[in-house]
Image 1 (cartoon, rainbow, N blue to C red):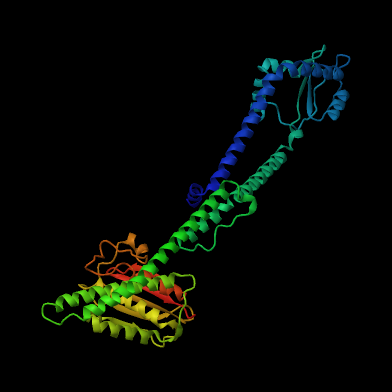
Image 2: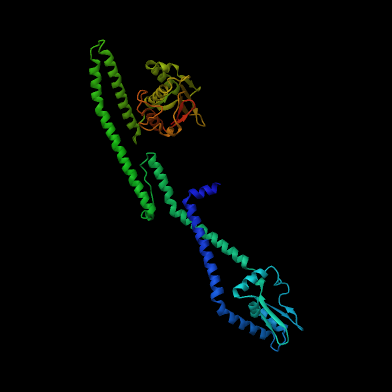
Length: 449
């Protein structure tokens, strides 16, 4: 059941349940103990007083030995919580003729009450008196005088519910920082370190406040380490560009002979791959920065997609089989053409690389999206082996390479999809990856602004 699941996974509800169980246990123990203490500890002290008092009442009812109804009525009016029953040869009278018979439903309760004071014979000696002329005067409790007990029970239940509500509000207020800590931890996990966990000044020195301060410190340290890592990558990338350029120039100047040409071409391919890796690193750091600048211009997504496919077909023969499907009357969007071109190229290159032996070609779909149809969706799907489900959330992370789908011979270092995600987010869009069975499907949504 849903409420049981919530109880198992909610500290607030469990604390409230513990509070209620503790309150009910304390109330039960206190009431039971008080009743027991009264019945056992005060019985011997109250018993003589009660016997003496009832004897005086019996003497008031029958001062001359014969019970007088008028006197009994006066006593009942003065003490409405008691009943008087007179039985004998001359007078037979009951103060409450409509009341329940002692042998009725309350007999069991009265027997339990008698057990606290002794056996039935002791109870008769307490409540019954016999006059000199043979009349029996029986005293008892008026049940109608206790009709307010249900109302008192309602008041007690209302008070218990009120206390429970106050306890719930108090527990909720005490544990409210947990929600802020959870939201802050999720922000830090997503790489958003600009907004620390905020707590009121009154809560900064308790356990939850210290936990939030510790998490804020951890987030600040992680942000500094990431910034240092980015700075190091940028510095290394910039410093490597000049030696790579000189190495490429020197390689191109090698003699064009049958022995040197194969080695020169292999070296030029390795240098080109290193140059592209450095360019991707620089571009990823620019897009991952807080102030990523986009050079937007009115762009036709379908036209840009055709240009990218044609460019890929020059260097990769398999790109000629890409199935491009575009919706009619696609809107013109303000896009950074260079970054979106990079996104399309990386998506198609990744799909071509992992579907080399697939029976169907790579598909590129560009269609309208959103309620008004002003946004677009770019979907690239291959028909390869796909990726294990547990690795899908990590595909767009930097330098992540699935073991089953990525090898050094297949190319790639794990920056392609990461760059695509950064480009989509820089445009205010979304990036999603799913298994299409067969193959992998990557969907990028780009809003109109």
